[in-house]
Length: 449
Ligand code: PLP
Image 1 (cartoon, rainbow, N blue to C red):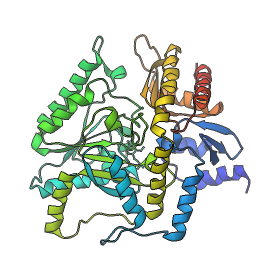
Image 2 (image 1 turned 180 degrees about the horizontal axis):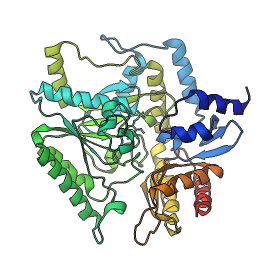
Image 3 (image 1 turned 90 degrees about the horizontal axis):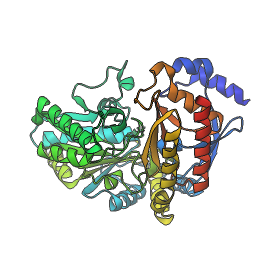
Image 4 (image 1 turned 90 degrees about the vertical axis):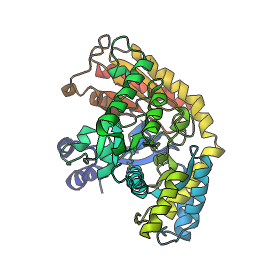
């Protein structure tokens, strides 16, 4: 089959996710054929440096043979089994043990699912189950943040603060609330320091809790670094000020580590980087380096004990998916975690992360760039129409998309989130590849001028 006929068949048959369907129908897209290291190749043989690791997930790049071998071996030994009805299998047991041994402090049990959305959806269900178990059936609302992202199931997208994912879908669900987006560069007032801004954000959260009635608020969901909102690092003091408020009103804290988990911020967890003390932690993506779909929800012993009580009353714990904790995915995740340790991936991120951050911060000298910030190997570069006055581009200008398209023309995949360009390259990226990435990005910015 000729490669351009793939494009035509694709346009005629596939519903593309998170895509402008009209533009896709008319113009098509790019069909990716293979990967090697931090690079991908399309059907025409064009090579791209993948500075988003796919969807913030291909942490070991696109050609880690050890993961393919482990998957093959597991497929031969036990291609499928489940963890329903008191059954288990070796890869799930081994992964649970390994994951909890490196988990953020306080995590004691793990539920395997297939995606970040499912892990967060399960977290929402467990929060409700927990409060029912405690005899607090009125304590059910969940607070997310504007531009937060937690997934695309009906419940996880409802906690997410992404209006374009709500419109047309009758979302969000009525028990979800959203507090302010702590994007300091964009929303601080003239002269306001990061600490003062964080205090204002914490006050807004407390005001929301009091207006709703603390007895009705069950949980707060937050990513350590907001990914889908634009790769936004928290301002100084933000989580320090937020966490005591959650404790004060008996509100559970879920740290969504789906992007930050496994080294992205330079520590194993974003929770370590920002000193978070969550009651629940969700993770996915780099858990298996994206070679298999798998996620995990980890919870504290307290929550688990309440679940035990409730299950004691109800009999079965009535939650589960056919493929949750699939043995091939668990085996691949196990091997991924071994590779992180053997290759000291955290040490590598700490070494090359500052090169990427310094290079991107230097783009602030470019007339289009208002702000570039990040940590470890995650960063966002914000385009501005008038950076002196912090005036953004009009949405119709699609400035982010213009830069994203120019980058692709020079062989670089980045992602425009509005007018913020996100960077999360594979964690294995080398210093030389970072230089190449920065040079290509510079060319894309110049071309977009
Ligand atoms: N949580 C965060 C922070 C994410 O970035 C994502 C996906 O990008 C999700 C949850 C949803 O994960 P998935 O797409 O695997 O369902």
